Picture 1 (tube, rainbow, N blue to C red):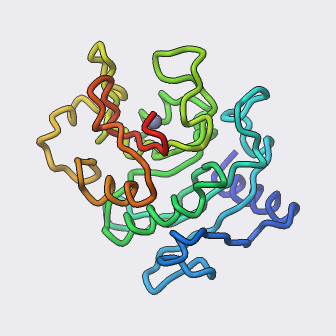
Picture 2 (tube, rainbow, N blue to C red):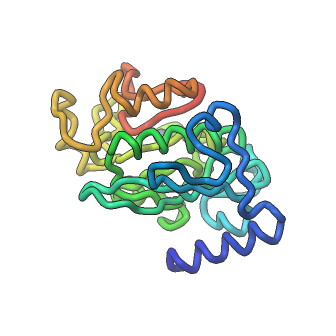
Length: 229
Ligand SMILES: [Zn+2]
């Protein structure tokens, strides 16, 4: 399904359940995001309902969080060539407002993001999503390298940002995605990289989230989560 058809489908689905256009930022997000979904900057966002049919690959029966508890975020981001783009991400409803506030901050800071599409666009494949340098959140799947253990992405409580610039490095030293090898040297300061205490880590810390780049092993520079897992 093309991006445009996908968006249109989701909008129709959201309207059908009466949530289209409803914006419910919690107090932490309200400070930076007025209820109109826009602000003096050109950052735009919408928070929408999703159903299992909207998530044909990333949700399956038996997953720990039902689709009713997830939300689709449609929001602005800055590309690597400085343009504005509109991305999509699915997170747990409890984090929808706070996550919007984080990406609003990243947008205002000019932090570049390569792309932001649902992992369903990659048939639910985390490997393909990472290879495409996709920034994403919900995907009901096991922890990388630990079959049978739900990843925090299964709960909509973890986000991966620019996987190429911020690779995952397993305890055995495997770098994912492979193109991330160029960014294993964290003394580099290339655009889109995440470093300790930078604006990205700080924006997530402001909503109580943790950065996987601070782990000893594995190291997961792309990963931010609400419970540090
Ligand atoms: Zn992750």
